[in-house]
Length: 334
Length: 304
Image (cartoon, rainbow over all chains, first blue to last red; front, side, top):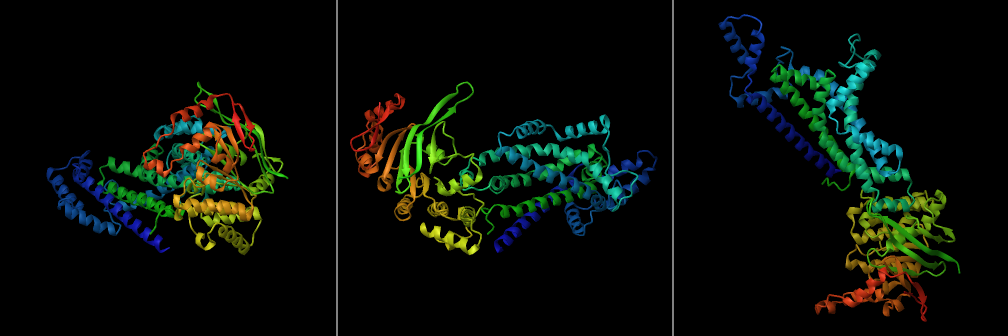
């Protein structure tokens, strides 16, 4: 147990290092980019109106002062960390003066719920079906399933999202295609709202599930068809172990070890996938927020979204890492 | 005398190759031998890689169906598709020991869990102290103890220990027959004799018959009562182990014996085998099958 504690502590240290580097890199990218937030804010404000040059000049001075961009980069960097510790990332520019963090926190639950459900469904169903297909290689239904999975898997997720949008939004309009919930319900813990949220989540979640599912299914099927020829499976069969136990605790458990590693590796990719999925379905999550922020030149909001997503993805990987030694006794924890 | 295991003219064909060049390979051809119930013995199957000895063992265990012929255990035909109760009764009586102990155990499962579930399944035990007693008893027979094994995963044990644990697990249901498929070839040379001696004491002290599959003539000579020598699926010589190995008659058996590298020959730089012997033995692979003919001393030798 003490070994596991040290293992967890070491991984936690790694987590902090990753989050620190990730956030620093995002800070540098946004602050070293030639797009000046002051100029883009000025441009937005002066685009459709006539200001005296003096007024523009004093506005520029005020904005520069407010964003703190006149200070040396290193000072800005330390200021940024000092504020981040308190959860403050400055005001958003496109939704001035709402704090950027507040916008992020409003969008975060949508993305987290969408991702968690679709990853869980994809991972569990894909792996279980893949394992069954690898174990019962002559089953017609599972064979047909493999062909379908192989066919869907290489389609890019945005194409799948558009196909779903067209099919269930226009040809057979049974599902809502835009937004996170219907306009006529009040947000809160009431049945109408929850029902509406679930209904709106079906299409974006299905597009993520349909695309992610295939690779888990195919990967697991390949792993399992190797494992069933292992001596220990034959040995268990000869020892009279029940079929269900063999599939569960011999075959799937051994194949789950590399699949868990694969899960940790794909988490980041799945997150970037949702950026486009959310755009397609106009879903009020982090992805849509990020795109809006980039389009609006809102660098404090970009920074806030990136900071939170770096932390979230790193934490998810950290949790998967902590599960590893529990699943495989060969992973050394001391 | 009742027969424990009867292998009656068993053949196994595999089809090999791609779609266009499909051909049938005879892994085992018309194998026939039997093991008696009341006289425990070590019955050795010797042959090179690809001679069909593992296929034969897999058929005896019911993992492969013979293409022709039958295998009977205590008068019942071995059938993997039998109902579960019959299959369990067979499994309790015929237990395997595999070549590589590291592959025979699930790396994620503790060894004592293996022993425990075997005791529960075959001895129908449910009381923990009785299970522990059965486990410890089987482990003592192989020179281990429950205290040494408890809580350990396969990767935490040495190959020799693990192979002993595999044999202990096989012994829990008190089987009359063990099928040991090259049980020592993956074990350190220094530990090999301890496993071989263990098989010997199983026969002498516990009355367990062992089908010992090997390509190692020295250990076969040391422990077997009877042996068969297989060449490309055919039994070419069968009889009393010492008689056969001291004076092999079939060209392939002679070749096998001549191929054993002695330290003196190796020291003298004599590493090759007589090419004429090799040619003579390999010609017989493609010859018509011929038949096994009984010799005056009781052994069977294939004559073409």
